[in-house]
Image (cartoon, rainbow, N blue to C red):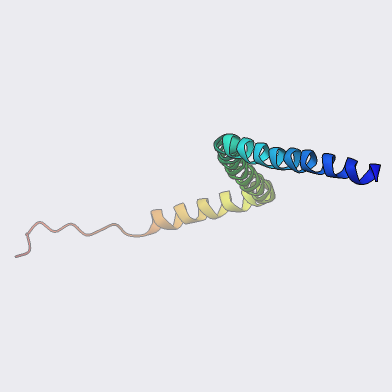
Length: 102
């Protein structure tokens, strides 16, 4: 009998505390929601800048590796350029005409 009286007294207090806790949790969630959204947007912006910089560095590294791979071909490119300049110099120039065309 004493247990039943204790439950009848404690149950409303427990339910009141439970409802108060739920309401306070909802109030603080709504109160701090703009700050959470702002933090998420700032985090998204920082992450996108990080991805952009990572992409730049990756492509710069790939370009550097390609350049370093082409360094042994540099003598061949110089010889090919010299041959091109020799053949271009051997080609006859444009003919100049003294009479204008009509």
